[in-house]
Amino acid sequence: MSEPVSTAENSPLFPSVHMWDLFRRLAGASAVYGLANFGIRALNFLLLPLYTRYLSPTDYGQISLAETFAAFLSLVIALGFDTAIERMYFQHLDQPKVLASYLGSALKFALAATACAILLTVTTGRPIFHTFAPHLDIPYRFLIWAIITSASAQFLQYQLVIFQSQGRAKSYGVLSVASFLITASLAVGLVVFAGQGASGMLLGKLAAALIGLIVVLFLFSPVLCAPFRWQYVRETLALGIPLVPHQLMAGGLMAADRFILSYYRDLREVGLYSIAYTFGGVMSLVTMSLSQAWAPIYYELARKNEEDRRRAMGRICSELVLLLSAVACFGALIAQGFIAHFLDHRYIAAARIVPWIIGAYLAHSVFTTFMLAVMQAKRTQWLMLVSFIALMANTILNFALIPHWGMYGAAYATIAAYVVEMIVMYFVAQRLYYLSYDLPRITAACSVFLIALAATQCHWPDNRRWLAMVLTGALCFGLLAALGLKHAVDLLRTRRPAFGS
Image (tube, rainbow, N blue to C red; front, side, top):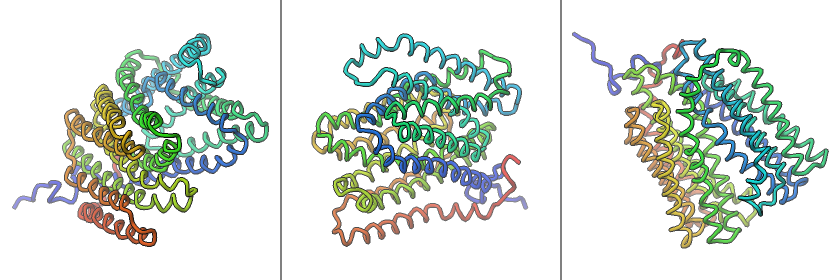
């Protein structure tokens, strides 16, 4: 009598893929990335009271504008190389000499392009800046310092991407935290002890970025000595350049609502919305940590076009959406209580906005999961289209909703635009690199979040709100646990040797 054929339904897992080990790798790497990302954010938050004692609001305004301008310019200068290098790393993984030549070629071109861009900015940028922003009250040297800082820090990002691709999460965490500590030490020294104000903050960050650049170039020295091949640069440019408008439009998607809100409403409402966005943005740290751990595993699995691997990838993506939905539910349900206890009472109105922003980031998290298929197919021009559709939807909805509902309208427009982005990306991803996602479970998990969102928008009596949130949380987590229970049992039944061992 023949043995039954192994399938996703009648077999615990997939014959050629060690799922237990994949989940273990994913959990371990996500924990390390999460500790680094949240740790840096927490340390930065703790430094704010110190900085605000020695920096005036005008100083902060100049620093913020200079760094915002530099960040957008840096996106153009970087040419999308960080994301492109991560994808191309796995294409050459089986050939160490070719991989070294690829990395060396890409990095040498990036160094040359960055140096030329900085030289042009220093020599010809002043008249251009004063022509297009004559009323922007920022010393031009601040812009130069911020641009050099941002461009130099990009090479640290390349090293972090390579650590991420190599699965070296601890090295990633050590380098990230060390870079932050050096930056904070120099900034505190120049701002607090030397009394240099905004100049001290920007110069401290510049010095730290240059130190980081020297360290990274030393780490890169073996591949920088490898032969240069223009074909490797060409394929990286082809993959990376379409990412630049995608990243610019993604930045516009995050910033457009505040500018439109400021046109129709007063700065108080803009401030409340910005606070809500800051708290809701914590969800993005969870997404980033999971993505940093999952992307290298995804590309590693996709190198061999096997049916079991594709089914496993779709399965893991579906499980990640369950996890992200649970995090989103938790954040939404505690948001109002957290803001009520830790912020001044003037900010309590922001509490009901936070769950909407968390929901928007949940949709963006699912988009990020689908987006890996576009990177695997090396069809990044599709990202421009999806980002454009989301940006247009967001802009139209903001103009339609903000005049009537103010910051609530901005929140509604934000979540709607990210949902549109997620849905469009799903169809694009399935066209370019088909995976067997468990779409009913993904839809059910996102629907559970809607229950939590609805509970946060009800007007509960103050003495009963906590009970309502606890009961809603029990319902939501119970439903999510039910969605994941069978698959968790299957996983525990199949513990195999290490993936890739």
